Length: 182
Image (cartoon, rainbow, N blue to C red; front, side, top):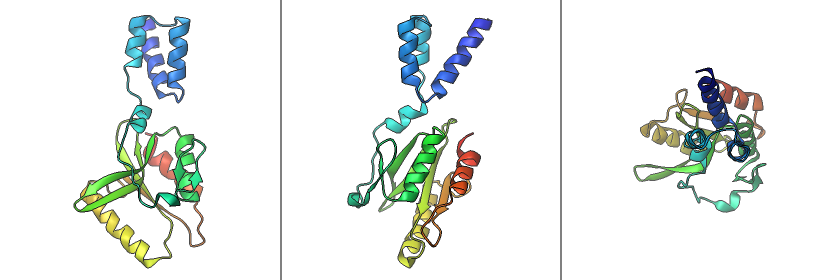
């Protein structure tokens, strides 16, 4: 019974680990688990599987994707780059600019994140707060996301650049710790 509890705990820990596939390979090659135990272990879907599944990604102004993350993802701004890096730091799987349909509109969330408990959040970063047309569209976009069931303080995170175009990473990290690392 104790061995089974240890195995169950180990399998759970492995599926939470960012190098799950490497660990799974080592387990198989070194014979640490029986084939049946390994099959059970490998059948578990990890959140990373979700992030790598095909999804509709926005093609809006693709030429503006000019910042590259440490994992090779192209994003639009340094602020988005820093958010992505912080999501990597916390090992949170995400999709960048996933498209959502709201009536006649096709909206893209900057980041769609799936927590360990499978609750989905969207993260909108608002960088051009100095432009009235941009802030008007962002207000309308929030209304459209609400129609789809995404609400600030519940399952939608909104961050902002300062007037001088900077982002406060303490706020980003706080949002991650308080809403996404459950």
